[in-house]
Image (cartoon, rainbow, N blue to C red; front, side, top):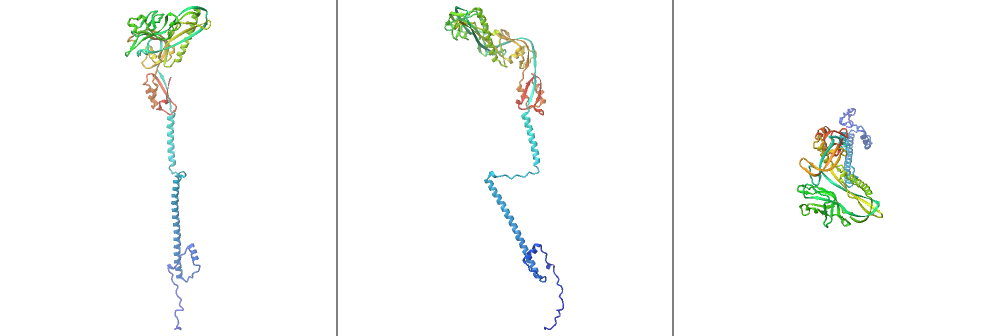
Length: 491
């Protein structure tokens, strides 16, 4: 058998066909490096099944490495995420515990920020403009009041004491100013004298509404029986009655003691009129001291001549007049007029008294009766009697100082009644009257109104002939709503 010839020995086996699955897939450089590291032994090309098995193991290895690599990556990301959340929580806790260290995260500006900024700037500018206009906006109004000239005035205006309260007449109140002055001279002679005490009393009439005349040397007696007399006759005004209230008529007069001597030097007291005793008038005519009774003396005195006495008295009366006028000026007011004339100044009889050494003191006392009337009321009465186009609205005499004002006694007809023994005020000269307007009310009417309405508003005031307005801010055309920012000037 062994010697049998093998017929197959000389036949060459055909080249085996290779399947696509048997073609090895080219590996990447990394895989090739791994493969070379894992299998440094060169594989023969004739060991095909071994290479296929090797390829599968390498592929499996690569998949495992890839999975491990991916797992590490995922785990790393998860750890980072957990760490980030944990850190955030820790940071929040730290911020809660440390409010002062907390710094809010600034939000990045968006695309609309410039647009919002522009709008905000415009709004701020508008508000600023309005604020400036409101704060600095002021208006000045120049008005020309109505005027009227009064020429060659010569009017009598009835006046009455405000205590009586007759509204139809010009009311006045009396301001009495008393002053005294003295001068010491060298005695020119020494002689025995008998001087009577003297002083001033106020005599009242509550008996009738007509004046009551008292003749020269009429007596006035006090409770102690001391008698004083008037040197000249007087007329006591009658009483007035308003709303059931009686106001006695009165007059001041100087009286002299009935006899010389110091016992007649007395203080202030009350007097009756003995001549009316056992008559009804006795209880309604009376007097009260206005000054003390002084100067009573019987004995030897240092004196001067009648000529020296007369000259000295004139000087002293002049000094008293200046003192009184100075006090009147101190009382002067823009709202009142002080009316007086020489007839309203009365001086008591001069007295001579011994001074130290051979000296004599000469003293004089004086009183001024000043009539005080409201300037507006006087202006209105003058306009009623002397103004041609007076409409009854408030006016003021512009140049009152150019007029001559005199007080005199007379019976004055008021159109409805005769005022007996009433004082009148005579006004003469040239002047002009100016219509007065309620400036505060004008401001209220103009507040918040447009400048175009000025003419219409001013037309409601007959005492204004024209008006113009100007504003501190040229673009304003409305008057401020605050009346304090509206200034009105009289042209």
